[in-house]
Each structure stands twice: as C-alpha cells, then as structure tokens.
Image 1 (spheres, helix red, strand yellow):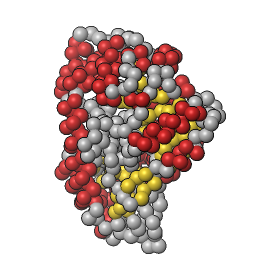
Image 2: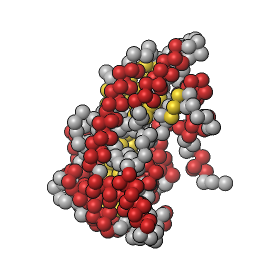
Image 3: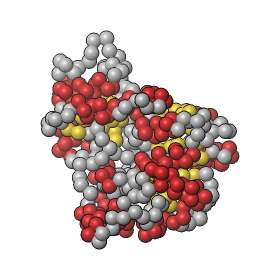
Image 4: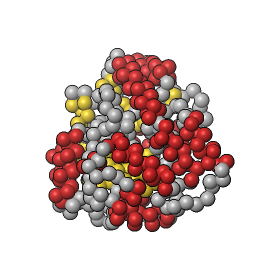
Length: 399
C-alpha cells in the first residue's frame, strides 16, 4: 500500500536486534547512539521555565529569533569564518535527522546523483533515495588500525552533474574523521562543478586527543555558496530526547527551506528551543566533560578488547562508537548480534545496519559508565570463549 520505491529501503537492523531483547532487563544496551546520563539539569530547567511561562504556541518556521542568533554566535565563535554567519543563514529544525531529511526534500529530485561516504548511519543514504535520487556509495577502508578515505575515489564518484556530496565526519559508525586537506580538496572539486557539499556535523565537537572540533570547511564558505552544515543538539549537549537541530546554509536556500519546515513540522516547540539557548550559552563545560568522558571510555574499551582473542579494532578519532570485527565468524553480523543478546545479554549494533560495507563488523556505543563497559567486554569474551561462541567450523574472515 506504500510507494513501491520504499520497499527497497531496509527496516532498522538495530531495532531488529533491540526487539529481540524486548522485555529483558538483563541486557547491556550499547546499540543506540546515546549515553546513559540524562540531560543536565540547567537545560531541563530552561525547558520547564518556558513551559511555566506558557510558551506552548506556534512560532516562526525557522525558529525563534533568540535561538537563531545564539546558534549564529556559537558557529562564529567556534569556526571563526572569513565571512561571519548571521541568523538569516540559520534554520532551526525538530532534530538533526529532520534537518537532513528536509535538506533532501529541498534539493533532490528523481535521477539526481548523490555521492555519500559509507558506511554511515542508514538515514543518510535513505533520505536521498526516498526522493528518487541515485546514491553512489564511497566506502571507507581500514588499514593498519585506522579508518581511511580514498579521496580520489570520492571525487571520481562525484563527476560534473552530480547534485550533492554528503560527508558525515566524525563518522557514525566508524569514528573516522576527515582530514583538513581532504576537506579542502573536496570543497575545491564541488566548487569547480557546482555540486552541493553537505556536512553532517552531528559529532563535530566529539573529537579526541585535544581538538576543539573536527576539521571542516565552514570557516571558508561564502554566504551564498552551495554548502550546508546539518547539526543537532542531541550528542554534544546530551539532548537526544529533545529532538532539536539546525542547518547553516545560504540565505537564499534558507528562505525557501522555511516552506519545507512548514510542510513537515511547522516549527520546533518554543520551550525546546529555550533549552537549546541554555545549552549553547552555558554548555561549554558540559561539552568538555562529555568529550573527556568519551575519550576515557574509548581508551578503556579499546584496551580491553585488544586482550580478547580474535577481536580487531581501529580506535575511533571521534564520535562515540567503536566499529570492530571478530575473526572466525561468518559474515552474518545481524545473526551474530542477535546471538550475543540471547546468550549473554550484550546489545551491539550489527554492522550491516550501516550498509553493505559494514558487514563483518559490529558497533559498540561507548557513551556508557565504565562498569557497564567492563561488564560488556567480559560478556563478549565469555561468549567467544564458550563452546557456543567460539570459532565456527569452516568459518573464516570477519564476523
């Protein structure tokens, strides 16, 4: 009864694993992309205060003026752009995924070519396909314990006539971070051919080993260039349940983008936007604390997994995920993830959920308390060391 084109879009494989554990309270849940700590009190208080003030009505399609100004100021402080970003280039959305979806609805038509770096969160590749666009997948590779991009392969996948290139960096699920020189080369290529460059910046603040934010080109963008940054409050400010995001885009794009917001959600709730203002204005310490906690969790998880026979992992440079493989198991990551749940109560996301390039891997969200990570590694090691979890007869390669 739905559009035939939707039949080719797979349902969430992560949800499929989670559903297999429905009703169980003994499962360690590392499958979703969120931490186990609630949104900080000062952000919740801002939302509650706005509710108490009765801010429960419709507002501007592009967001309340105070939040748009606040986001513009944040972007300027963080990136120091050559041309300052003003509020007219900001559109507030009801989540980061809504931002990406609305961008797809605004830009893509049937037959358009869209090149995307993969593996990636499945929504990123599904949204252009829903609009009838053709997606060219450009896979990362893992060499010598590090995820890398063959930049020339990406440029070759985006010839003249391509509508857009989408890059998620830091990347979900691998934690790969695109190097500055690759960003610069990609921007030059997109400028030369009139291609839209779309940065999924959901994890731009969650980078490790000293950086304040991930590399990128927002600082070099002119106000009317074909560049869009899609962002979210979910990850950096621990606000996954608030469903609040934004885009930075050309003024002429934002003006038309308001119609797409109207046709979808009309506007983000005002009291949620008040929480967003509090997050930006008072959240610097929160981001620093979150980044430090994630780096400590990453280091602990990688160190422990390297002691488990058969596990191969590349330490992520950013985000909150470890994408790793286990030697001696067949290529069914979905089945493997389901067996981990059913046998030892360990909830990981199957690599195939992030596209065919992810088969052979599983994703572990390490935004969790240390004792839970320790328990999870113990359960994995126990499963792999047991008669039911060891190397399968005749099996070879990754998971």
